[in-house]
Amino acid sequence: MHGILTRLLLTAVSAAGFSVLVHAPSYADTVCSQTDPATGECLIWIEVPGTPGTPGEPGDDGPQDTGSGAACYWDGTSQGITKPPPGPVPCSSPAGYWSNSYNCYISPVEPQPPAGDPSWQGHEPGDGAVYNCYQPQTGLLITIWSQDPPPNSGTGPTPREVAQIAIEQMHLSAINIGIAPEPGPDSIGLVGMPVWMWAKDPNAHTVGPITESASAGGITITATAKVLHITWDMGDGTEVVCETAGTPYKPSYGREDSPDCGHTYTKSSAHETDDAYTVTATSSWVITWSGAGQTGTIRLDGLNRSTQIRIGEAQVLVN
Image (cartoon, rainbow, N blue to C red):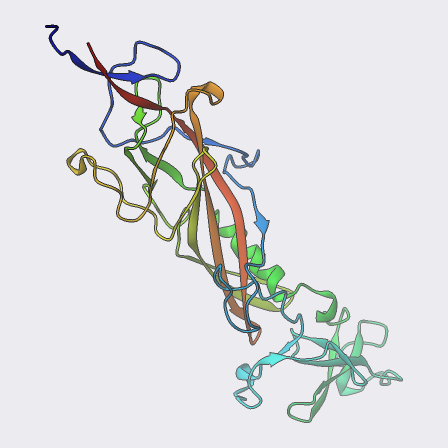
């Protein structure tokens, strides 16, 4: 009678000599799909509106993108005026064009006052000009002197555009991938065994929250960004959407499934390019902004990073 010899073969994806399954936590040497040549940061931004929902309510994919906001706004708080509250105003009216810097509608005085008029504030005709400054919110009409025409906020940036400046200051980046089994030629996972995914060393720039402010065109905007979820393309046609940064794997977890971000492969990667699955993690950000008497939301998607892992099959041979 022949004895029964049982041995575990790891059907390696490229080298028949693989015989070790690494259970240690993995820290991927990831590759960014695109980098900013000036900063080296992984920056691939695509604005997406989210899944449509009832107006004013979030869609299935979180808060909706709310658009650009109004470039012209009234804010009387610096004058001690609380009513009407800060908010958008038309950028033009019969009284002239709106200037956020002066908080009023601007129009040149016609005709210009004669020399020596107090409205010149010591200047001579031809040296700058005198303008009407009208606040319909208070009924106040004054004259101002200015060397150059006061800024026309209707031709300036929108709150969203100023928010984009604040976002640029955040230096948002794709996550650094943590994954078990770890990438590399000396590591291989098994079909049917749990794979753990997580954001390695998460920080404000990779998962948020992070807050920055920016000013332009008489508008100051404060924006706060945080990751809504991370979508993991596992390379086998499966996408896993994780609502958290994931849990780093530890050897003590053994064959347990990840509690919040995991996957199980059903076939080996032997027939994939480089005999490995390419795993890509894409972050979906939600940025909320406020300022100019308005609030809004910006959705950013496309910050991603990739790595490769090898998956083999366990076979039992009976002799």
